[in-house]
Amino acid sequence: MTACPTGIAHTFMAQEALLQAGKKLGHEVRVETQGALGAEDALTEAEIREADAVIVAADKQVDLDRFRGKRLLQTSVSAAIKEPERLLEDALRAPTFEPGESRGALDEIQAAKHARNQGTPAVYRHLMNGVSHMLPLVIAGGIFIALSTAIDINGQSSLAQAFDNIGGGSAFKLFVPVLAAFIAQSIADRAAFAAGLVGGWIGTQGTMYHAGPNASAGYLGGIIAGFVAGYVTLALKKWIRVPRSLEGIKTVLILPVLSVGIVGLLMIYVLGHPVAALMGALSSGLMHIGASASLGLGALLGLMMAFDMGGPFNKVAYFFAVGLLATKTPEAEMIMAAVMGAGMVPPLAMAISAFAAPRKYSPEERDAAKAAVILGACFITEGAIPFATRDPLRVIPSIMVGSAVTGALSMLFHVTNPAPHGGIFVFPLIGHWYLFVVAILVGAGVGAAMVTALKREIQAQPA
Image 1 (cartoon, rainbow, N blue to C red):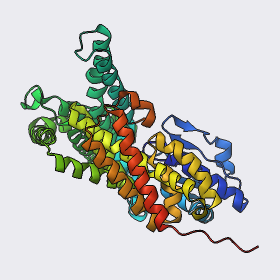
Image 2 (cartoon, one colour):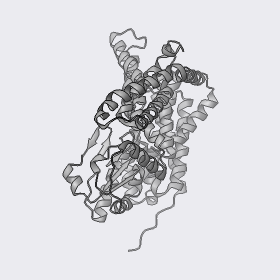
Image 3 (cartoon, rainbow, N blue to C red):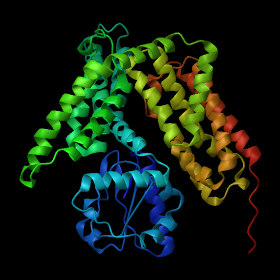
Image 4 (tube, rainbow, N blue to C red):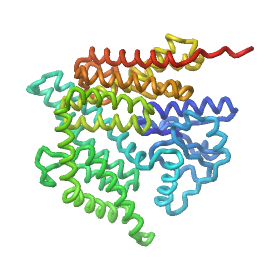
């Protein structure tokens, strides 16, 4: 099973890597993907029963109960992409999975160990679980707001008003509570969902904690509410003991009521006001940011987007931009444009380099370059991973420089983007789209030139 936080690229790259490794080693491999559309190629009970071993390459919470009694190897998606053959061999020697009776606590311990061993903190996985469920709301909301503006910038048209209500009045108001709810659920299962949802919603309602009708704790409040709800519920699950016959009541009544009450009171009396003030200061600072500071911010976000191509640094930069969209300010849309442009550069830069200097790339890399063009155009930064895994010391610095150039130029040109995903498919919604294209091409060209200069020609293997 493969599952990455967003379910767009890494999930399917890991699937392909494991399938190819299975063919090479002579193993029959079946891979279920937990992508953005849910489970695909789902494993049947018969297939699980007959399997010699199970590999779960996941960077988010997945249900492991159905693999009880099987040899089970848990790892990260990036490990499945980089070392699929080793994972297949290790899985055949993995211990048998027996979750036991105290599933919640044991799973939490196993998750913490797994996160430490893989270098992926549990906090990051919980956050990404929330982000992956939040993204469709942000993307849809941003597009409908942009369509509303395109139809009638003054908002007088009934259709423009309808689109604005769908995007800004509905989708954007829901994404913070959804973020908080799924962070909480990742930590303490479904019992924490309600507390996260309520805590996230309270964070968006400034009047509830006397911060004013226009105040909001925003996405930062959603993150805090989600983690508070998750760990409060987890603590309640451990502390509250009831007879086995009342376990059902504990899950659907006792835990939700107590956790919703605790989290709600904390958000109203303790957390809501200071977090809303912090978000207000951040929004105000972005509105008054100077030219040199905006260039530096664009370059920094570009560096982060390219550094690990879908990893923690990339996700932090992306989530920073996505979260700011809720402020509905031009500055937030400028940051979103810089992040998207910078994220498109790494695959495009590697494709240009491979086409321009084919002797410096293997046949497999030249084939990957064709796919990288499409992936880069669609804002899937992971398209550069096949190149980076083979030659990280030359590739990663080069694409970081290219992405930094694009991020800085995008901010310099005041490009705006209300949609957090889509690449070329959302170009009609982008302000100054032609300058956006220039920024991307310049950054990709710089990255391609740098990596081409650094790489050496591949020596032909003797027959």
